Length: 339
Image 1 (cartoon, rainbow, N blue to C red):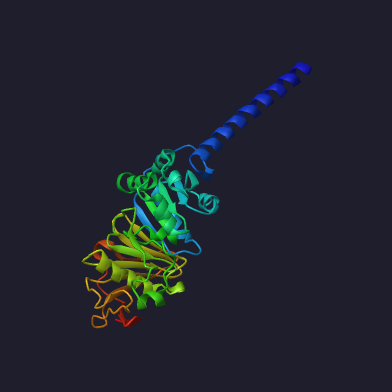
Image 2 (cartoon, rainbow, N blue to C red):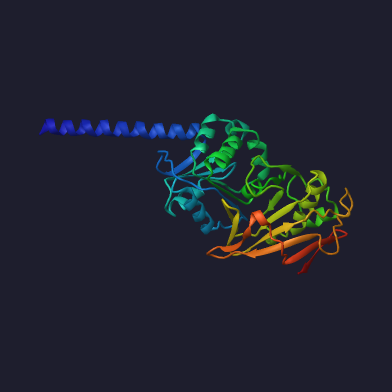
């Protein structure tokens, strides 16, 4: 009996030691990869994913849009990247079911963004989501890095769903309000479209269907329509575009674009699809109010309400020709006219 007890005790010690070593190995891997934590299996899986884009407007996340991404991931590994914050998405998304794992990476420096181990892990993702935060950090830390290279691989080669909310949404369009000088307020920038807060740049990501597009979030809740119009005016003038388009997304709302360009809108707010149709402002100068009139039809705006099941909108290949409203600016004042 004594010998049996000693044998059992020895086996328990060995098992405990091996388990501790395994846990330590996993933790070291996470720390090396700048992971904040993982829910689910640490083993990589390869699934059949399909591409898609989620533009989420901030505030409470739109669960239906995240489930849309899970479906498109084929049940693979769902990765979150951010430059601040914690692991709130891990259990939230994992508990929805249908994924192998959910892991969050904190990439808050150029050094971390250029870690080859980070690039390798991102390339193993079957869905990628960029959390909210400060888009100036994303632009500063992730441009021309292992992170941006990995994301482009996921877009072009692996073809997985990619989404973002708030600041994470802002960096998905080809043109970005990068907030390098802080937030831009509509009333201020309409009176001076070259106000120092209007800082625009091209994104470090190239996504299909978002060429010549700039996204904005927390849209009607924070009165961002005016500044969005200024962004479009500046895109036409400063980047010599022949056309500029915008997608504005309300809070608790998500625009989902599938691999063919078909758009559905989930959530409780609206999405705004704005088209300049190549009409340039009559006046867009420093220290002068924006004037963009064009017979009260400067911008053609399609407004699509979200809902719980996904409101089908249109196809991005054929941007909507029929407008719900026309927006125009008279001497720094944004005006709207129903069509």
